[in-house]
Amino acid sequence: MKTRLRNITITLEESVARWTRIQAATNEVSVSRFLANLLKERMKQSDEYEAGRSMTGPVFVDTNVFIYAVDLADPKKQQAAQSWLADLWANGNGRISFQVLQEFYSKVSQKSAAAREEARAEVRDLLVWNPVPVSGETLNRSWKIQDRYQLSFWDSLIVAAAKSASCRFLLTEDLQPGQDFDGLLVVNPFLRDPASLTT
Image 1: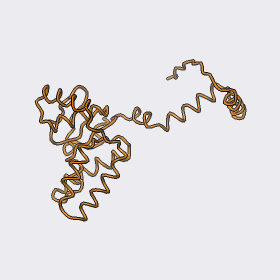
Image 2: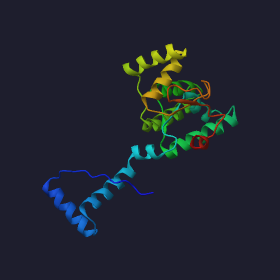
Image 3: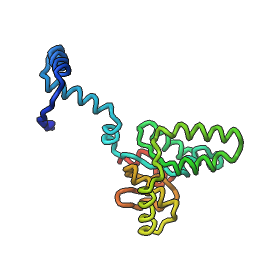
Image 4: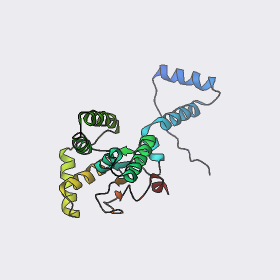
């Protein structure tokens, strides 16, 4: 299948244009081909490109998945949670909110001082997932979701945060698997594995 090409016009500073002509000549390609290749490489490196290439897209992870990942009481759920989290770390599709971090820390840090330090380390690591803050917009969205779907306030806040993060999937056992919140699909991580989202 042939790739469709689009013509665009760009304006460059003289020094940038001169450098571009020299680089194109060095690589024995036209200026437009050189710039196209340069932009294509840049695009491949960007997070947006990777998210767009992914068949799953962003996945919002509810608190219970993080709790099961460190809970020894249910080895089967622990293994499933760890598998999901490893996959999301690897593909960069994991999304959370500050609500999730707060709930996780509150629950896990109660066991001991060592557990508290481990929970803090985990929360610090998860900050790279750019947690969604509870803003006025997120709060208003959660109330609309609460009224429309008759969810608890806390569950509606999770759904609102997932939608704010442009997620396609919400990983939780607290809501009905398969429920669709206008394009946000609930997935029970203990009934499906990560590979099932790409099929």
